[in-house]
Amino acid sequence: MTDTVAQQLPLNSETWQKTLHWQPSETQQGLFQRLYQGVLDGNRQANLTRITEPSGFWEKHLWDSLSGLAPWYEPEKPEWLPTVKTVIDIGTGGGFPGLPVAIAKPQWHITLLDSTRKKIAFLETLCSQLELTNTAFLAERAETAGRAPMHRAQYDLAMVRAVGPASTCAEYALPLLKKSGYAVLFRGQWTDEEEDLFMGALDTLGGELVAICPWETPLTQGIRHCIYVKKIEKTDKEFPRQVGVPAKYPL
Ligand code: SAM
Image 1: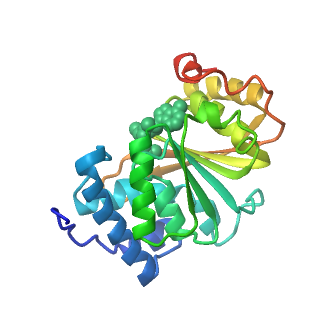
Image 2: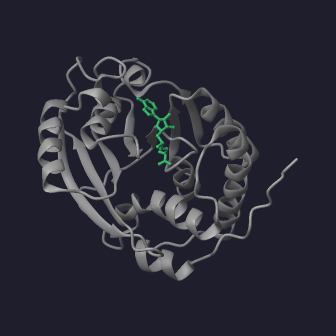
């Protein structure tokens, strides 16, 4: 039984169009609404998000998740844009950015990874209710997955939002990418100091900074940056380091 009936999400068609040159189809809008209801229901057991009112959910979960896909929606595609089939969302939590991406890009296959088993169990049930067939689930630490032959160097695209310092996110993401794969890091503020540290980490991990895309969120004008990284070299087998080390001692 559902206790909280989700209010209607705003359509904000013009805002989608103006910012991302894209609008959800009726089916996708219906899936966003069911995702919203599912997350509100799941919040009762799994503490998934504090953002529960419709415009906040739309902006901070749906729009923010899809802002990372902006290069794929550009009318003139950037020359570096990769072809994507396999995606991993590292530290997906309540399914962000992975679930909005799975809805927006049904031809991509998205693995949702989180170290909290309860969150992954919730996402598995939710995706089955939403009949999303392009998702897979991994209750694992990113450091462990990055060393497992089944996952290491297997993905075209890795996405990481709100999981720690940029260098830590890079250490989680790069080992999981195929050579020439891409990582999108979703950041808030982005400072020169952070960029300097990050460049050093990328050097160590075999990555190259390709683009930094600054954003203002469309309803509340929050500062965001999407950071695009290409894996140009095989990552040394000493990375990722042991569980807990990348977060405690970022490169
Ligand atoms: N990405 C989601 C979002 O933006 O709403 C969730 C962000 S939440 C602040 C961070 C999530 O990352 C938590 O669900 C946590 O369990 C997961 N996490 C943190 N470190 C991790 C690691 N090393 N491996 C896998 N998951 C991790």
